[in-house]
Image (tube, rainbow, N blue to C red; front, side, top):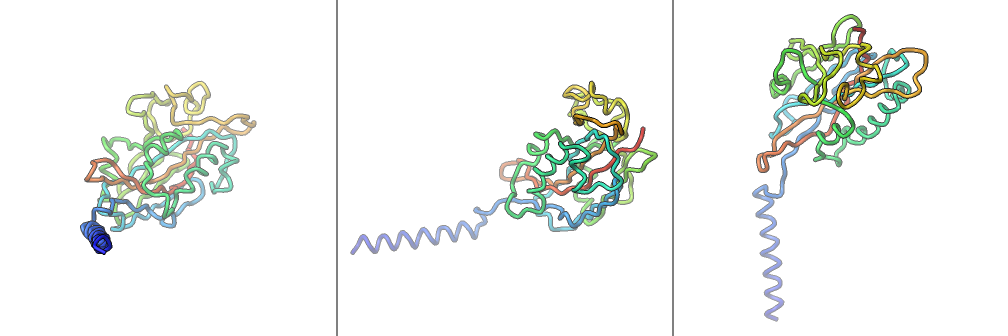
Amino acid sequence: MMNGKKSALYALLFSLGLSFLGGCGLESYPHIYPIPQSNIVQSLNNWAVVNVPSNNLGSSFTHFVVFYRIYVSDVSIPSTTRDTYTVINPVLNADFNLFQQYIDSDTLVGVNMDSLFRNRGYHYLHLQGVHNIDDVLSSSALGGTLVFNFPSDSAPTMTVGGVPYTLMRSNGGGVFSPQPTHRLFVHHEDLWRSENINSNINADVVGKSGMGPEGPYTYAAMFIVAVGLNTATYSPIYSTPSLIHVFMLPGS
């Protein structure tokens, strides 16, 4: 009889303990909400507007990052849509199929997006004349728009808060040496030549096998991810990604 009373008491104390821990928030964990895919407007193969939420990204938010990869193609697509990715480059289609499952997902959260994208050959977007793009894509961007413009006659830009910034490719922190050396997102022979597509030169470019007589052309796929800081572990946390667009690079 006494053992039964003790068991009931222990069960009650255990239940109260769980309630206390939950009330203290110890079972909660920091998280970052993504930019909904519906907040991004894509046009043709050269324009996208990202409408950034103002205050629903989570208290741990610090900045946004943009991942990109460049794909060589033998077709000119006036309007890049999901149905055209295989035609542009089968690797683009395979990459998108992997990332698509995370877009707007309520269950596939907490994934290290740095590892996910970098393992697929993606790199971080840079801006010309800006030491750290994180400063441009910090909390000051909340509630505004990011306008990506890939015009046919000049270098592509991203406009934030009315200020245009020229987009630049990564060099992996000096790990590789992109060609052409200006690192702009423009179509150029030094960009798509097969002998330059390797881990030492254009590590951010993927070629296309069985190229047809048309072309070549080059396209850049870009995804945006919100980043935050886990103050308990001082490690970065990531939202799920959203596709900005697949842009056709303008001529040099």
